[in-house]
Image 1 (tube, rainbow, N blue to C red):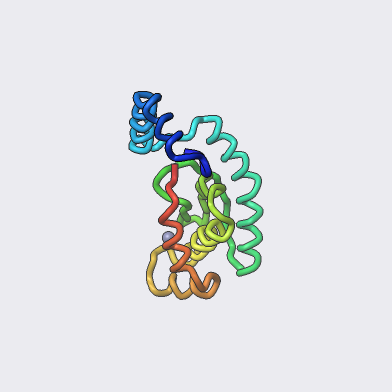
Image 2 (cartoon, protein in one colour):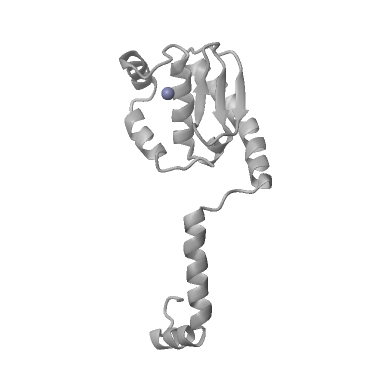
Length: 148
Ligand SMILES: [Zn+2]
């Protein structure tokens, strides 16, 4: 109901369109349940955006903190934001373009740290701490975002 609109008029509107309103509410509830998936067009535009911005940013951060990686690839999966292989290749999820810049950087730094420490042990965490002091907060914030 629009703001500053008399409540009575809103109610009258509701009762005159009651079935329609209830139907729309039900539809909305269903769509929340199903969580709408992006179309292939949306994925492709995210992919080209990702290819444009992620590799240069990774190179920049690697340069700044003296990390050396082999190749960077843009991937699409729903299981992780990024990964790092034993051969020093970094995979970045195209969904990263949907994140705020600082969280995106956090994921990139996290993967760069895996170049030296493949696990999530204490050495990994102290290295991550040195390049991203508020990484715990970032990790927490990151959980609010869904990969699709
Ligand atoms: Zn990790």
